[in-house]
Image 1 (tube, one colour):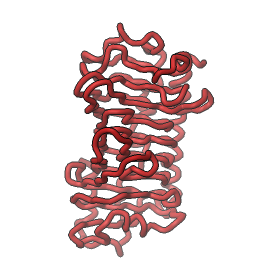
Image 2: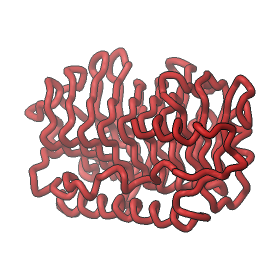
Image 3: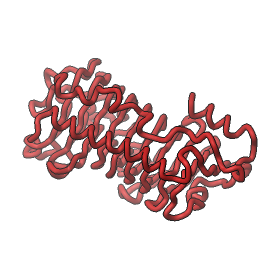
Length: 344
């Protein structure tokens, strides 16, 4: 097995590649800072009343930037962004006022309220929730595209909240809530300055990372996050035998169980998982009683993770477009309003 430094370096190099590819892909569109604007307004004052109708209006094999501005409201929809519709930004004005909600359960592929299959997708200032409740798989958000970003979103359910399926993903300043395996999948993802909250009544699991072989460069990194819960919560358990999760410079409340990790009833996975912690703090961060097969990382192991250029969020996604197709503008003040929302 690679040493800790090699793992984190190779993993973050993959993330850096995603940053570069994402930027270059965006620049191959019609022009780097010009976008087609589509407005969704439930009152009927926009181009569409429903979000899915706006997504359907994006042409197949799309190659231009499309900015879908979702006005405040509660949207009771099941939304999918197909794989052949890349370069889409879906943006509310505030997560507290722009809510996408559903209540499906039973299957991780069929239950998501929102499914993102497209690459080069950006989601901003949205609440995405599945209100089904306890006791069943009820995904709020499935992310299966490559080079996907979520900024300042609220993602909530109980079991299997965030299906972080495949691809390279970046979550910044998001709130993610659930109780059982509520951040799961086999993506290569960086969670920066996110608040992760367990609502489990006891014995819940935050992560279930699915890396199946040592050749897969996937894993979850939580950097500068806040980890809280109601009571007695594990940091994670291995969905796949080579599961990889790292928490760095993050606050952990007393809800985190002292042992930290669970082997999901399979002791053989203890030899192959990679679970690490670096300079976390708070009452739940004490490593003295962690399971012996987890790792307490030191500076040389995580120095690539702490390089500003490697994790600068601006390199992960497009700036807010400053020019929109005139045919799509309903007001001369609209562009300025969009800038204000996204630069706050």
